[in-house]
Image (tube, rainbow, N blue to C red; front, side, top):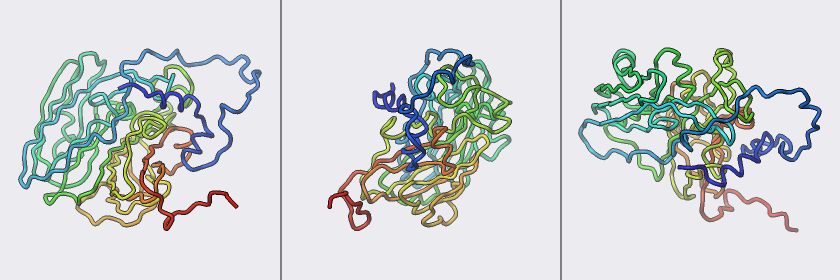
Length: 364
């Protein structure tokens, strides 16, 4: 897929002020509307190399790309194919970065299983890769979650079989040396293990993943951003991203999270990290149900305004959006939204609901 015209036009005109407005916060006028005196840049030499040609136009996973709920009553063997691939793509227009991915997307593909299933993993490292990769499944009982057994050099392929024995939503990630570097470059995803009785039916399901990116530039600096180990050690990310790109999901990007106002919605939210937890919040509502830590064997929390999601963990949340409009899904550490990119937008479509929400139109 390629960038939509909307995504490029909107993001190129978006800065701190407009990002804050998207999050429901007012932080001042858009920078594009402010005249900055030229002398401020006198003697300044950009430290970034020019943006590189991209290998792929999109790394942001489609939030709708989820296998259908499991209806069978017996365990089965679930084949999973993962290709590890390193690729240059844009974090935002004119800002490139060397990602590491599972199947060319961030987060990696959503894997759906049921308690008692056997997962049969085939992992391939693309021959163009420069590094070894592997996968550690938090749903796997076994050394390293399978990391050692799945370590593949460029051009190699390996297989692993493991049984899933407990329900929940679990992160998987690359776990070679410099594991934090690989996760921060995009190598994480989610495996769902449904309980034997399945999950309650909902109308829509979506899949999102949050991560931090540490580079040698500031957010918005045009050019090619190299990974920076010092800023990672200091846990001072350049970007905090949902689905791998700045403001990727919503009308400002890939407008793929659309629901009707009478529908129930379930969101699977994985946090790869590698270091910071998320305070997952929907501006304009609450989570009707939250399974903290993705713990589907526990009773859900009800009517939760903001739920913490630890790095290397997940949350499963359900909600309704009975009033039409755009709902911003954010990390409520809001500087990450306004300045570093952590925003997705869900659009609810349907008739007005003045019994719940009746804004004045300004007429006398």
